[in-house]
Amino acid sequence: MTTPSNTSQKQPEEPLTMDTFLQGIWRENPVFVMLLGMCPVLAVTNSVINALAMGLATTFVLLASGTLVSLLRNFIPKQVRIACYIVIIATFVTIVDYVIQAISLDLYNALGAFIQLIVVNCIILGRAEAYASKHSLPHTLVNASGMGIGFTIALLCLGSVRELLGNGTLLGFTVFGDQFQPWIIMLLPPGGFFVLGCWLLFFNWIRERRESPKAEAIQEIVHGQ
Amino acid sequence: MNPPAQSPAQPSSSVNMILALGSIALISGVLVVLVFQTTLPLINENKRIAIEKAVFHVLPGTLSRQNFVFTEQGGLMPADARVAGVTVYAGYDRQDTFIGIAAEAAAPGYQDVIRILFGYKPDCQCITGIKVLKMTETPGLGDKIAKDPAFLNNFQALDARLKDAGDGLLHAITTVKHGKKSQPWQIDAISGATISSNAIGKMLNESGEYIIPLVQAHLDSFVKATQSNDNAQ
Image (cartoon, rainbow over all chains, first blue to last red; front, top):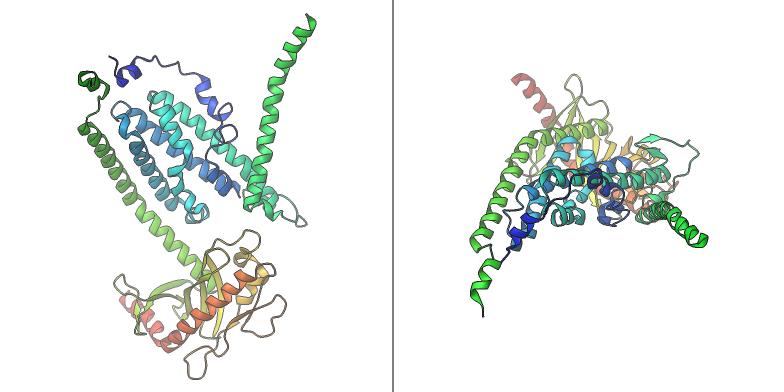
């Protein structure tokens, strides 16, 4: 005779560890591991400042929507939860939209429609559904910060390479001399795919190297025997 | 088949669902309106500064501006929320002498509509500068229309003289192939960005045909407006 709300209350919550924060940055990085939210990742990373603004905006929406979803998790009936999450997310995206306009119109024009499109960023709805709706506020906040920072780092990885090669600048400051011929392709959509592919290759290579000593050690033990 | 077992499995009644959605919508509404009201003055100020910067950029020597509207009947009115028509920004120097006007022009570019602000000085009957307000042209190619110095040089004194009758441009403003400019009313295109360069020529010609005859016909009104403003101060 257990109701769904009873089961969720009975589940003991795992303790808050460093891993709750770090999993979004490395092990479950939304871009490099889960490959989520590819639309803003490819579209707005043609400069460092755009990447940073998009990363911070997404982090804010993650934190704010996670807070509300976590606080209201016992109040929102399962049947209408997605509708509730979308309304909550859309609210905070609208807030970000106004705040960015108030901070800088140039930045707002550069980010274009992608600020509004945070509403449908699957990282945020995914976190609301998979984490915030099942965890207490401190857990949600720590996890959302990790995910947000992980997403921002990923955007910056792409943005810095694309701006450097495509425009010869970093954060607007000229890095290479006048002789440098910009690789315009890097600012165009194919450049986004290309740089993303290179970063994925790099991170997977690191991951494999980290795991390979363990595999070699096991092999040595097997051979030793 | 088994109604008593079903009721505990469905803890949320319709009332609960409506209550949850209703309260979330209410919270959402309050938050959005609150932020909108707080940021509105800042956003308006940002827009004003952006327009001012653009006007000062396209009309060198300008230190203050005043907005006017050309009504559909061709009359000139000080800008007001109630007056519908084409807005022009009149620029004035230190002595509040009328220098020229800045107006918006738009035409489809390579990807989307390009919107620019251009300055026009009646003294030289020429276009004195352009500033791209909005575009989504290809980075590195089409977007050069906003910053390529050689291309922007076209607009330091682009001939926009009127016919003697004053009802249109004497020479249509046209964009010519890169390196083929021979007349002061021609725009030297950027090689590799022909469509974007053509769009600028087209919008300046269309907008110029409409606005410049009106400006020339109302030159006195622009001057008077500042003087009456001074008296008021």
